[in-house]
Image (cartoon, one colour):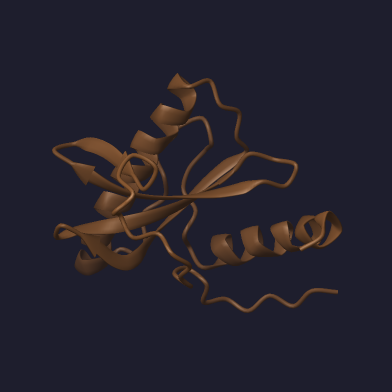
Length: 132
């Protein structure tokens, strides 16, 4: 993908994720929005919020500059725990995926534990976006 194509695709991807209800609060670590207010959605949102909060804290501890963090459950599991994929926009455009789980309250990403499944998935991609 060329830089121009990636630059044109990034806003459409962000719009699709926001429209799908996957984005959370501010990039400064504010509380993310909850998914639709039903019992099942709230239970699913808890690990997403926790992973997102822990990942933002890690990024900030490492003094990494980012624009936004969007997290979604991808339907995979690692040792019985739900895997959450977070896309982090580092700019220029450079969006990095982090597949993560919480183990005893500690964040573990696929960089820390390569066995955490993190191949391509279409989680969170349910909104069609028409581009010009």
